[in-house]
Length: 388
Image (cartoon, rainbow, N blue to C red; front, side, top):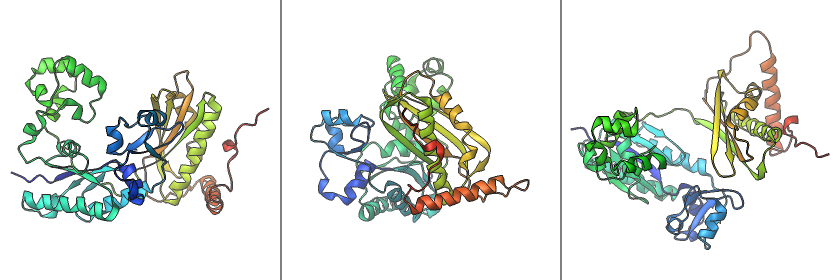
């Protein structure tokens, strides 16, 4: 039987942990990271969670729930610490999949490890090294596939370490509550519990036709996952960035389309400047809007070819905003995300020099803004509408 060599790494309360790495005197206290006035809690220490603070609770509510909560602003080098954490993983194996800033997968198959004990030793040493060098506590799950490893890593946080031996996947999964399944949200949980399904094991006892009626067309895949089956490989992505994103939370809810479009264009301009600095190109633009009740909608579209010029996305932006912002309500947040990263150099326009001129102009503006720390030059559409 093959070894369990798939590892899921999940940093514990990552944003809080990054802040505590430079402020160790706050360890053991009720800490959260988030905006104070109109923000939400993006990370909470386990002490704060025990007091009722959770993500993504509005910050103002969190302070009421936990009056002695220490609320810290986002100030840490989160991306830098994340890169260092995954760089340590790549010291062990080349097969590292960075799923998000604080979690990912490792496949230790290429490491030539012969026994389960050897695998566990390597993973424990990695866990200890991340703590020793970065002061970031992490939880680890080891299994034969990604799904079981992910569920295992989250069972005994913080600093969890759970191993599921080969052939024991169904035994491990059976008694677990269905809420532990990634992607099963509250509404699906409610529907399943209404049918008498509370654990993964309950799913496996159901007749196929009854399960199809309860779950829908995806019942086969759902049943297989509840049995601990998953054939997805760990897929490392080469290249420093998978996407670029920026958001703006408003001091007051905004309902003027022109103002939202102006702000979104400014976010796009800032992101494309970073794209050029990284010598990348982008294909896909996604816009997300969030309402006052924290519900949100998004819309995205890809260009035929990747570009490093924001002007290529300008015509798409108002269309995507209108597609996402269909409810007649004011917004509290706008987010712009660029994905479809291509690190190949831009091709020259053999039929004209328009893009080349735009690229030189954009590069000049990037240099001036960098010299003036972002306050050198702004485009006309970034200027706020004058009051008359």
